[in-house]
Length: 272
Image (cartoon, rainbow, N blue to C red; front, side):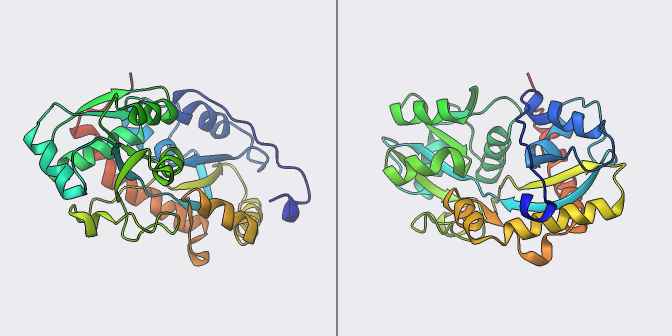
């Protein structure tokens, strides 16, 4: 984005509250376009149902542009007896409540994706919260836990290395970086789609001309071949150019809130 904006873009990773602390800083920032937030599905959808937030997820922000879509993958320890997704579902049904699924923390995307998988397949397993995805993958490799609904960033390297099993991509299309892993439609759980898309937001007080200048910088950056190759390599799919608009991001967030909040609340998922 520096090329179009003509100035440095400084990245500050603000931890805490599953992204809500960083988002709150932008919600309270001056509407000058200098403080913006790169947030994902968890920050701008799930957090509204899981946390009591000090800001309004919709009205305190102006969408700038959607950036990438990242389908999740159903993975398991290499010693899992099932060889495919149908076999995994059959094994889970035969062993209700006995399997363990690692998550990146209570109320996170990995747990919510796991609940979706349970609901879709009529299975039950125990969630084990960890502090991040890396320790979950480590315990999957060691065989200490059974499975995970994992982000591509956490799981891809080990899937490629063959240290864990990958049963299905939770999307309509296979990932280019793992073409041998079938989709849930192909593997036996049709329609069980789950992804953590990301987008860029500014304060709701930001003038329209600034929003559109930032949007142009995002679109230019996403058109860069090097950026595209790097994102594809970690399983991130760039949104089509005609969908890289503030209006498209607002519509996506609205639809996702309407879809996921009822399921999250019905499952009683709350941050701990």
